[in-house]
Structures are given as structure tokens and as C-alpha cells.
View 1: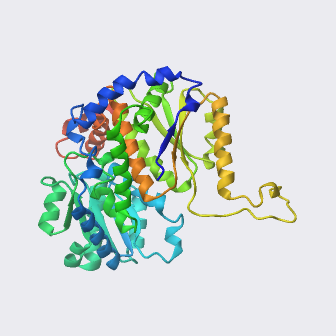
View 2 (view 1 turned 120 degrees about the vertical axis):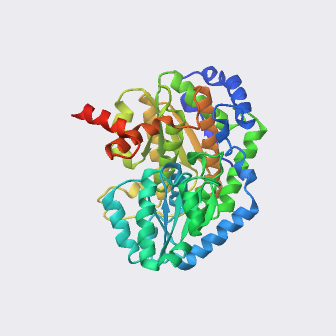
View 3 (view 1 turned 90 degrees about the horizontal axis):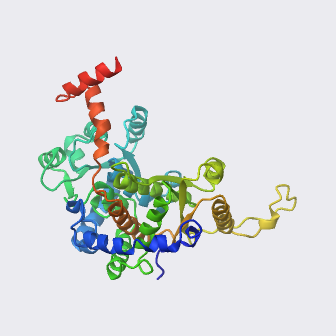
Length: 448
């Protein structure tokens, strides 16, 4: 079976190979810090051996719960924000039919999301749909007090209880939360909701391979055992060697930091498969929250080509040269569609008649990469054989490990997010939350 590959040849015109491989000693040291759980933020390193530690009992329980939900629900609402929903959504949308909600023949519940924003129209529109559908929900939060999901859960819990009655509503709510503490844990215990645990030593953005991600993915009808198997294969590879020539996670971490040191402060993750859009969104959160601290860090951005070639392509080709691209490639698609021959050929496309759409897309990918390199944009390549549970599992572990190494190279804690609290303090003060009176007064004076 093939594995994920990393290619740096299209970086070497911009930074010498020695400038990348000089990180090897640094990476060896940081690998020991990660694997031995001794580095910064070591109380959140539970994800490192998570794939190999997931029990068969937990997998069986999640699969049984997914079947139970499918028996009574047309829609499964995942309530969470950041890592509490992005990982699950990334995998589900990558594996789903691009028009799943319109197919009409789905044997598993449609997955909708709430609590990832505070949009009144969004949540009201969701309620319009849930009025007419049989549904269940999972609320995902260690604390139960994060504003966005807490608001959504309060509203949807109220709707669920009015629709089904309080007793049946309990059977349609699953809490994924802390083992011992927090408002959601207390409520779930008091109300008798089914509970799955978020491990104490796994932070939100590293939690895809816990019930946070695994339950929604299973409910959507995908093989969580294969997902875990893919992650395990990358964990095994990770433990075999730290040398860049043998470990793609080390190579990616070193290459992006070498580019960063050369003045390339923005990394654009490029994707040519529309159903990988949310995978890039998950990657952006993983790297943005992990690295952006203390005035340091590569800014993570994302584009979906060829669509964004008609918007962002101009800037990438000719704009300021402070960026590099990482191209996420898929070796082969899961479907087949050929371009037909047309007698009149008014569109001039007969020169590609008989070719698969994928062939054209691949040539667009290669042509764009070459153009951007000529325009001064270095390119790292990451390739997976296909979009499947196994290879998405590989990608998840690959990016998590490389992110930890990159954070340590930057000498930051890759597992906290202190900057996220800044907007919350201001929002709470503006809403006159008890305990924020001094902040409320400060802001009033500031804006008066």
C-alpha cells in the first residue's frame, strides 16, 4: 500500500537544501520532546499515541451509537466550534457525495452544524429545517460554557424538548465532554444524556481521532476503523525514524521553517479537489492556533484551485513575494468522467475530447505550479493516493505531528491559544456579563 509523500524539489531554487537539512539536529531534539512528552504544553500531548491507544471497545460503542442515531434521525446536528467540529466536518465533506443533501437516497443521517457561529439567520434557518425532520444532536465542549456552542445548544435543546418531549429528547442528545468537570458534564449527568469523553490531554484542534470527530464521522456512514488505521500507520512511521529522508513530517516541518526564515511568512495550502475545502479549513485552525504566538508564526491561508485562480491567482502570481504554497495533491479520483466529442466544436474543446476531467485538472495543477514557481513562489508538494478514510487518517496525523515540530522549532507552545481569549473578554464586557464590570467601564470610556 502506498503512503503519503512530501516533495521539496520545487523549494530548492529558493532555499538551498542545506538550509532545510540544517534543522535535522533541532528536529531530533524536538522529536524526543514530543514522543517523551517533555516539551512545552506536554500536558496536551495525548494525541501523539492516540491512534495506537484507541480501544476496540470505544470504536464498537461509537459504531453502535451511530447505528442507533441513524434508526431515529434524518439529520444529526453537531454543535461545536473550532476543533470541536472542524475535524469531523473536514473528513465528512471529503468523503461525501458533493451533493449529498440533494441525492435523496442517503441511508445515513445528513450532518448539519451549529455553534460554529452566532449567526441568527443561520440558526433560525436550521430550525426551519429541523421543524420538518427527525433529528438528534451531539454537543461538544469540554467546559460547556464556550459562548457559541452554548447558545446553540440552549436553543436546540429547547427546540428538541418541545418537539419530542423532555424524556425522548434525552435519548436524542449526546454529550462529548470532560471526564469529570464542567457545566456540560454536570448537565449531561443530571439529565441522563449518553456521554463520550474528550481526553484531558488532547486539545480541541488535535481531537479528530477522539469521539469529538469519530462519532459524527461514524454517523455519516464512514469507516472510522479505516480512519484510525491510516493514522496508526503514520504514527508507526513517525516512531521508526526522525531523519527527513525517511520521515515526511520532519521534512515538511523543516522545509516550511526554512522558507519562513528566508522571509516567506505566509503559507497557502492549495487544493484541487472541491470536497477537500474543509480539510484546508481544519489545517488553517491547526496551524494558526498552534504557531501564531509571541509575534511569531507562519500565517496559514488556503485556496481552492482552479476556482481561486480566477480570484487569488493574480496576487499569488504577481503580488508581494512573502508567500509560499503547499500543494495537496490526490493521485487519482474516486469517480470517472470523460469529456465528450462535439461535431460543431464551437467551444474549441475537441482537442481534449476523450480525456478524463481528472487529466485536465492534473495539467492545470502542474501548469499552475510551474507558473507560480517562475513567479517567485516556492512550492512544497504533499500527495495522497486517493481520498479515503485510510489516507485522511494519514493526513490528520501527518499534519498534527508536523505542526508540533514546527511550533517547537519556533520556540512556542503549540498546544495553547491565549490570544483567543482577547475577543471573548471584550464581548463579555459589551454584553455586561457578571464579573466583567471593570472591562465594561473601560470599553465604554474607550468608545465614548
